[in-house]
Image 1 (tube, helix red, strand yellow):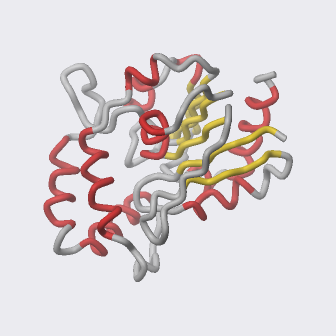
Image 2 (cartoon, helix red, strand yellow):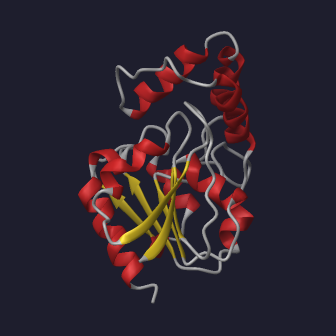
Length: 210
């Protein structure tokens, strides 16, 4: 079975991947957990297919050892904030304002972000601000475009055309057009809203890796 490593984004945990993972029974699945709600977990997997959602893709570029068999970005990016050479990024003040409030209101900031993503009524009683806070700061400063450009494996990017977190212009500027598939009317949570479609794209992509 092909080894796969899933990496979730900011405000989520490894359980985020369950709808997709259960549709991939023939893959040897491992899950990074960044410790936002419980103990962190970072499996060591040789030559995996790496699948990252949102910030999880940038985190994988920065932290997971290579070589990889392939890379799949879902609602992802290599840089999140705007820069002179990346004008489609989000305004830095967006993260700055979230971070400024986070120390005093971590649950409220997290809930507001998840609501923007499309998730309501989330139980945040177990959030771990010591993990979420630094990750939020990293989100505002990360720039893994050089690592993305140096990938020596096949790449697939899936994104939503109506994503409020990663707008379609940001997706288009993050990935080569021949590697990017934009889903009309879809938002930031493709693994939750389109799990069967996402799983089918992963299966097709993996089949071409040899």
